[in-house]
Amino acid sequence: MPGTTPIEILDGGDALALDLPVRGRRRFHAIWLRDNAWDEATRAPGNGQRLITLGDIPADTRIASARIEAGQIHVRFEPEGKDVAFDLGWLAGHAYDGKVERGIGWTAPEIETWDAMLGADIPIADFTAVGSDREALAHWLHGVRRFGFGKLTGGPVENGALFKVADLFGYVRETNYGRHFEVRTEVNPSNLAYTGLGLQAHTDNPYRDPVPTLQILYCLENSAEGGENMVVDGFRAAERLRDENPRGFDLLTRWCARFEYAGSSGVCLQSRRPMIELAPDGELVGIRFNNRSAAAITDVPFEDMAGYYAAYRRLGEIIDDASMEVTFKLAPGESFIVDNTRVLHARKGYSGAGSRWLQGCYADKDGLRSTLAAIESEERKAA
Ligand code: FE2
Image (tube, rainbow, N blue to C red; front, side, top):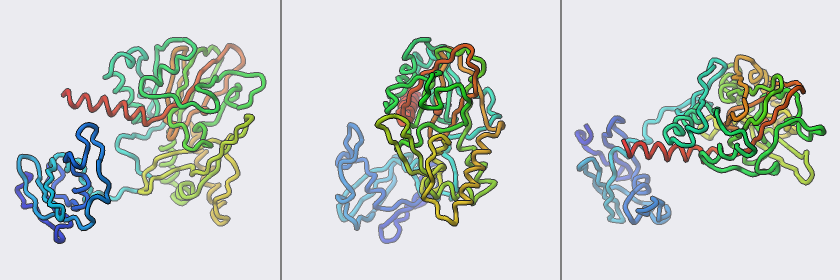
């Protein structure tokens, strides 16, 4: 039980240790506690934004005393002579002491990587239901966050309907391709996405910085033979590469590739980023893979270039492996969304007979996550 073991003040007040619900005994630094105080002089009561800078907190802040009362720990900080109460549940949820070391390429707990075995378990929802029912929307968005893609059925077959998908959770990101782009056969294609050829699975626009983090593709016509859509979990592909060739994985994370698109007048988009991106603590956070817009790689040392290319080739083989892909065909009024920093997409080749017309646009996943988190917060309050 919290409070049954005495609070220990450690290192002359630089830290304390206490027992917390579920988490057990945890230590907290005085400066961390003081910086995370929720009193009205530290945090704005309305929006919770911090009102002071770290420079306003004395560098020699220490804990003079602490006691537990009614689910809170009351801490007195010196030299300010300031008393602050912390909710024990909040501390348990934000404890940083005793974190276990996670391996290179770990993924966040809300993420689940997948391959072809995912089968029919893809996040799928009815367009009308997610537009009118917050719970249905949250369920679908939760699936999109978990798997990095999702499908909607039963939407209107009308020009611009894709914007209504973006409206469900966020905002369109406009680019040099416009607010949206048309995906259909053109006589003089300036971009291979507009022809009838199949495409290797890729992430879109790796030449942008930052890349669009979501893509929506909305089907308006699809009577041509073939033309199925296919998705591959880039995180699972990266995990496979890491497990079979740790050095190759390391090379693709450590050195930057380069990407470029200069196929339209007045446009010269260039970026320098790794194909597999890790956070500083090893979390797998992004994939950039697109043969059409790969530029000359010039940042890899001579000694590492052969190994880099071998890893790049192997990553492509893993991505092309049929055991990795989930395939589906969109009917008019159906759409899908992908996390473009994680899930690669492709189109199978299609014949010229019939017509295929999709509209695409970009959006960003901070909006999607925000909408989902807000609904989840509402649900917790209502429970
Ligand atoms: Fe694409």
